[in-house]
Image (cartoon, rainbow, N blue to C red; front, side):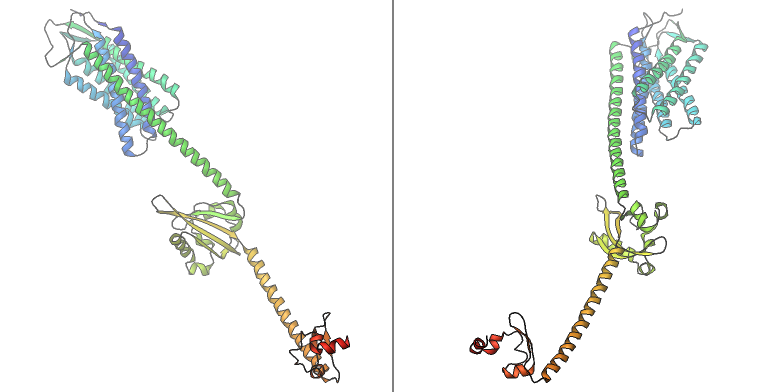
Length: 464
């Protein structure tokens, strides 16, 4: 005798909502998985996503099974087979997450994964059907069974395609929402197609044991509550991960923007060569000022040692490494030296090197600022030459004056007259021997005296 069957509309509606909710959570977890870096974190999200999605799919299936009723018949389920159906559902979900977790997903992986997922989902469903313990046997409609498997294939391929398309676009919540509805309907459609493929024939004997799980209101509430709790926690974790990733993206964008502004500022400085070096002294950045001063373009210097700008003498003396070591030890190096341009000419350079450290005081590189001071050095050199020439001229002039003074003194000393030269204050500037002897003055002491001091007050007053 064919058994009368029916479905509880409320539980059917709940099963569809669970399928859609599980799909929505799975899509969000897929995006969290794709944005996670590090094997440990990826593995954690892979397990979390697999358990959440697998349990959600199984729960939809089991709630759909609980919605199935045969009036007057006790419904129960075999616990080991039910547990096996949960494992199969989680395995199918894990396969999906593993496939989409890779950077690039080839079509071959999607094909193989879709077939494997469909087999796992169909297996979960029919294992669940065989776990039913009722006083009836099942007669299968092969067409509907085949159709259910085809729906499982379509659902699996669609899930993988949607996962790979939206995993890097977590911000597209509207697309994720509609994709979750499509996936949920497909999964639920496969389940109910499989259910309608079964016709139950009454056997007349009891097939329920004390170890089987009997359907009850408490079981239904427990399954629904547990499912919503698991999916809700998974969704909250995914949203928290997205918020954290968004903060990281925002911080990185701010950092990139700041670095770009700094780069533009550095490039705008035309009179200074500003560039960075790694710990080996190799150039890692190059600004417009460096190109203008040295003549080298960025492509010509990146990755090369800074000694390429040094003269052969400095290279032989290992000057470049000595400067870097001194900067590392003292925290600063400042000096001057000759540097070579691309065309082979040299220039005088003012050099400042500062070491760069991370938070653990490990050396990460150096910053170097070079300025062309050739004009200043040449000007200073010219000033020194002019000063030397002026000093030589003064020296020659002084010697000439001394010689002329000696000649004048020899002539005036030979004359039998008193000769003296005074300024406006009557201070004696020059006097001959006749003048000195007459007034009883020493030739050296009389210079700078006034006539009043030489003549004395009485005589000076009489002659004035």
